[in-house]
Length: 113
Length: 113
Image (cartoon, rainbow over all chains, first blue to last red; front, side, top):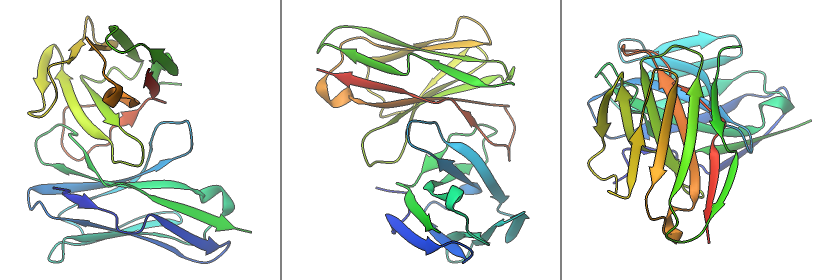
């Protein structure tokens, strides 16, 4: 039973355009959501997060949107750059004080020049 | 730079031969986690330590054990590795508080032959 789902295994975008990565979750106990970026042969690197009390969080070119009623979040990257090419993991955490993250299976983003 | 370091990066072990993976951190975080990521799957939490308190996930096999001798170090012991234990093993750390990110090491890719 997959509690966090990233239904698009891959996404290709041209440099300068917007990249939109989607994530759905099923567990109502999740109240903190994170996006991690992963390059080959490296560990996941934290990118941006959002608490369930918000519907949007922005950090430079990266914006995360949360729709709690739909149990859906998305990561927008504008403008996309070739260096953004990586696997992006969506993760969710219940409010326990520990980051017992439940991950999606990832979306591989390829940004072409 | 403060970081999470895993050793070795790559490990090959024989079926049934005990193996130990190492993780150290300079972040002084009080929580350390071990995740298992099999090919094309989402990282899955095995267990975590809050200071010296060990917390096992319900579906983590008994074959997997962990030790945390001090704040900085945490070890993952696989007592009798099976072929199905071939995976990337990720160590992470965080503070014991809500709405904070976990920091990951680069991972150890374990191959059981």
